[in-house]
Image (tube, rainbow, N blue to C red):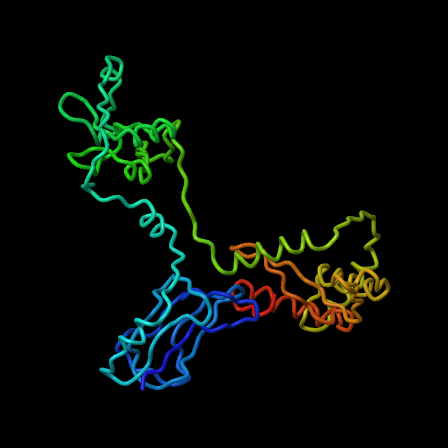
Length: 339
């Protein structure tokens, strides 16, 4: 009997997941406990193990695609088993591929049933004298230099500062249409091996797909900024004794204590001394926390992660230092499960 594998909820805040990698392909045998795929959650990239024995009959989510939790991820069953009914009734996967979304959104038929008027652009004498050189290709002009373009495409090209002589038309008879302007990429000459440069007056950009982790980072930082009051204090602190103590601590033992570890401990003790600051506004009540957790910012390529040193007021400097180092490495490896 075929077993349905759904997109798992690998963290309490996860609402969708991205398939970072498939370790099996359709037709491969799968055993319970064997790693089936690697899933990118809102916090980390984690291995996802199969709960079933059998053959992988269907993959519902391609690598790099995002789907909501509990969406059909795969089907495992007996070899040759018909799963078409299951696939037909399953919810469709949601792609996070912006390029494909834009293709669908702006797609136009090559030969529309009722073509729009054509604007014929006649080259002026000045244009003939300053016609593009061999380093700037001319994509769209006939033997007498005229360009055939739809009125909408002409309007968009003017607004965006696009040279229509560089646009390849895909409409009927080589006519430039809206999609050609939307998908136009300006030609950038090689510049004899030197750094390339953008064409003056032409807007250019690239879209980068946002990972689940980066979405969570943005949401958490926004929540921190707008849901809690912020105030800032500045003071001078004599660190001579701290420097001396750190030198003595690092002369023994395997774990080295950093100034950052000392600051974490100092903040934790300060919150115990001033419990009113260690409180949360919950709308109807103010929760005064008896415990002290300290978030430690860790910079990674995708942004800023804030793993938490729990019960920091009860831990020694060496223990705090060891935890922070472990968190930093897990953050770089995308293995943090709580942030």
